[in-house]
Image 1 (tube, rainbow, N blue to C red):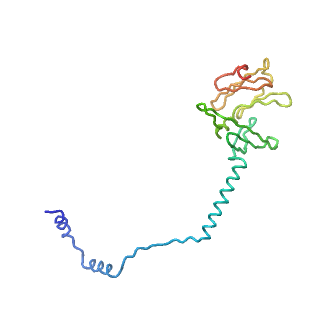
Image 2: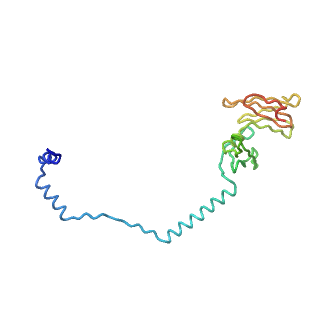
Image 3: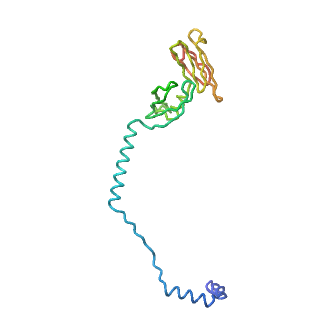
Length: 200
């Protein structure tokens, strides 16, 4: 017995009722199936407007990039206080604009490069923000010297011996060792104090 005969034998046992057969025959004779096709027309005016918006939009985006790179609002620690600032980055350089405790506008600039396998590259946004969160030393007009690290601030005026001061600060499990040469810079390391002769 062939497959065709087996198939026929199985389906011979199935029978449709006369009402169903009549309905199916009426459907096939009365209706003709026609595929539906829709055409979409886009007017020339719409195309011209879209092209104009694209050209103007891309020009203004390029213009904004030329004005000052990528800009965002960040929270940074300034002298022990968390402050909202406008942070603009372009090619490894940044500007930081914020208001100080007295409400005055402050503008700060900086930047840098990193070396990977002997190749110089500009610092990324994250690296620049990390640099901004590092400890800082301030010499005030009243003669005092202060160290700031995140939410900590410490006066170190009386801690200098032979114009050198060593400060250890910890925040969120991170330790920073700061070596300060009076009026002559400072060095920071997470591993230990840097000898003053090493950063002169």
